[in-house]
Image (cartoon, rainbow, N blue to C red; front, side, top):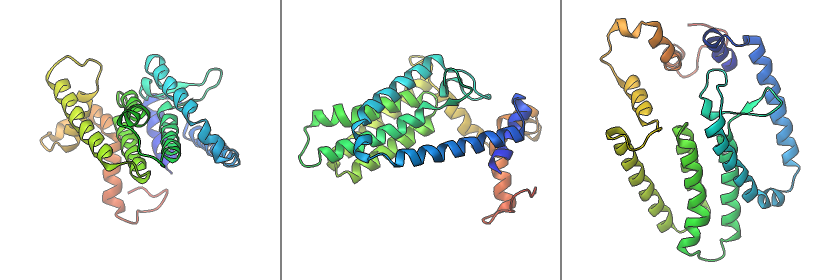
Length: 248
């Protein structure tokens, strides 16, 4: 059902493919994903842990390549996707970086949990990779970047890292993020950021001062398509929903 819901609008706006084509494409991805899960599940976790640092380096390299050579994929942001050469498939390196970062943190904390680490070790081997991946991802997907940061902090907490380092890192990140937003909104010193886009989306979602004629324009409908569909689903479906293939 989600595939049909999303692909119908995609087909109309981008004029790319059909709803049936998108359905079979996603079925193929599901089967491929299950096969990968089964294959990787047969590998001993020790081997996966040993490759975590190498995999993290590869994912960071892919993020950098995507930033400079991304392309438009079905109307999505060019800097989020990376096309696999020689194939019609594309993927988001941020998802791969998310996974490899968590595996790396888990392995590092497990290997070094027996002794108290020096502050410089925490900066170089724990907070350094987290910040590096966060900065590479947040330029195009701030929600994913925030999720990466939150899950990483949760891993550090469960990994029994000293709380003084965790709280210090959180405080530093909040202050730095606040300063970045203030500078980006009030000056032109930080070019190429998406702060104004974030603020525009928040204002569009929360604003109640728009006239009826503005909301009814086709441009506004296209811009707020996902928000409108979500609100309609909540209003008509309630908690239990109305069921598949039923239009309110």
